[in-house]
Image (cartoon, rainbow, N blue to C red; front, side):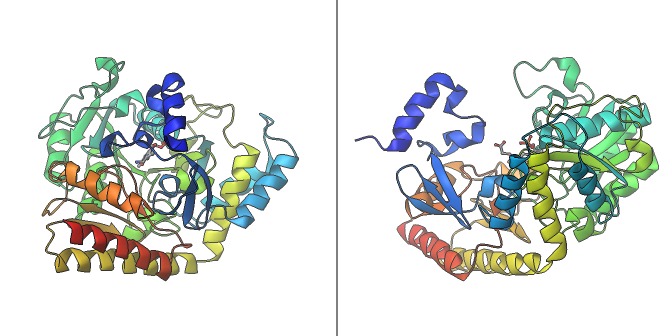
Length: 427
Ligand code: KE4
């Protein structure tokens, strides 16, 4: 007898590439049929077969207060009753821009878009427009959405000309994307030296979370700031994941580094399609219609999405205790995981900061992409399947993150650690 998830997946693959609208959801990395989710509340999601899971995907980060937060839901309903979209300026977009710029020191101006990919693509265009330079330095293992220039093969060592990492991306689109090694300032210096006065920007996930979670080494982010200043390049923090999670001011606040441009997504939309980019006024004033860097979007600043996002962002600003409570729960979880891994003598590496973390099935350490790639992805798949069977909904890939929300707590943590201990006993 097929489960409802299996039935739906059998239908989905006929009409949707891979049966999903974003690849990671297909569970290909863990070799099983994806669970189709039909509802969520607080720290829980419910699948179409009536199973309940403690959820650590949280829609890949947006649900900082947990799923289906009533205040956010009410705001969305109220906004929707006035109309879904006008394609015209609205008051709530002004309120959102003022709320962000008045409370994020590095943000003098901001533009709303509809995804993290759009935010990154637009920020890079603004950086190129401002500097008049073409090249961009990114880091192997960091993911910045699927715009052509960012889909660069992560090669060995330092690559001075990007090779596309996807079919359909012409060489020309990645030729100006240079790849450095995360946590290796020397690799960045080398690229600047090879391409003097050609680099428009360095873009970085200030805490990498797309090769699994990899923390910046002490001095790494400050070193990037220095190298950008010395070479006349802009520093772009891609805070689509870290923004409003590590602190209200994201990694910029947490690590005390001021980027020239920053990109946001996920939490800023509270689960609705919202991205944003912004930073120094002199850069952002180049963006159309006041400048000649073109960028546009039918649903950018959509009033219903803004209602969700502004409700969450305003709440996080007014309730800093959300961070204390969430980080306390995350500490319980990650500390408990570390203790179990030691007790059962499992050579795993746990990287975590605040309410973000990952377990790597490798002795470690994991400070960059090459080390992350050394993980045993087969064992990760066994661990994932065990945890899912025991009611824990994790990201279906070794190279993703565990997200904790305010709605998680002692009970969900104990259940998660119980499931992990069961797995470790079985090995
Ligand atoms: P979106 O276009 O998916 O909204 O954002 C792209 C993006 C940009 N920058 C960072 C640091 C990101 O993590 C992302 C997207 N994150 C993935 C999770 N690893 C989204 C999940 C998915 O692709 O389905």
